[in-house]
Amino acid sequence: MLRLLALIVVLLAPVAARAEPIQVKVVVLTMFEVGQPTGDVAGEFQLWAERWPFTRELAVPGIEAPVRVSDDGVVLVLAGMNARSRQSVTALALDPRFDTRRAYWLVAGIAGVDPRTGSVGSAAWADWVVEADAAHEMDDREAPKDWPWGIYSLQTRAPGIKGSAAGASGMAWRLDRGLVDWAFELTKGVALPDNDQLKAARAGFAEAPGRAPPFVYRGDSLGTARFWHGVRRTAWARDWVSLWTDGQGRFAMTNCEDNQVMDALTLLAPTGRVDVRRALVLRTASNYAHAPPSAASPVYSGLGGGLGAGVEAAWRVGSPVVRALVAGWDRYAEALPGTRP
Image (cartoon, rainbow, N blue to C red; front, top):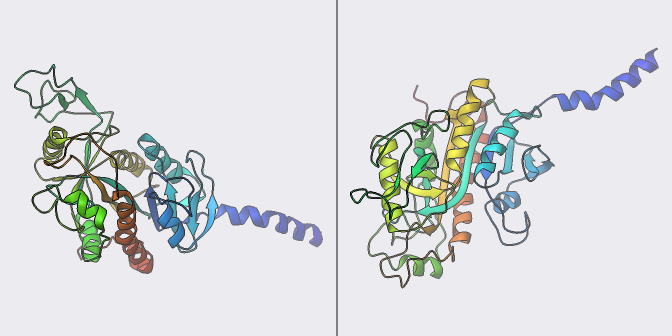
């Protein structure tokens, strides 16, 4: 009988071990990779995978690539672009192998920057994330002549009116101010890479900040699945962010996923699986949202040297925040950094 009991204990031990979920401290969300996960041209995922001490890879149903897990409670996710990021956030949060109830969620990805707020290679911590997919759109050439553009809010009949996207999206999310304050103060002095390609890219802009060397600042995120570009669309983005934040937000970075991430976290929050207050959005500029006035053509011409600078900036600015959260876990497990006594 004792031998039988001993055998049962041995057989059940792996099951018991698997039953204890991984206590996640920080989830780093990257959206794409170039080629292989490591060892070649780096996308958003690669530098984190190579530089953080991850020890395991786990396949998660609903996420396109295995997640990386470290012994200190950090999980790196290749979340995928556009709507795949929403699916990946949900898949990780609902996987019983992970306890994400107290996890911090850091978006660390590249974006297009408004030259009125920053320059290529710069990094912006968002106070606001704004949705731009849930909208009406009319061809600008067919819109009424007094409309500045043909994109306008759902449940309205003209631009410049704040409507509603009930059942589709939250539209605007204000990130925890104390947490963002803390992350920015921790990283505002981080030196960012500069090179001749970046200097050439910003030379066409007459004034700072678009012409300035890369720097860390506060600026808000506009998420839409469309890869848009141009002076008029940048003007629309400024107006759209201001509209949905009641004048509090300032458009800085355009991307395809931040709205998806924030909406997923918001919908998951009532389950207790996530704390949406623990979200941070860091976007780094790989390109400008519109060509400089001196450009021969306004057509978007690709990332140039901005991809390398952008992914490097995301690591340099994002990793000190992850390290600080892990090192201060005795406090930050319960109370958010920047929480007022």
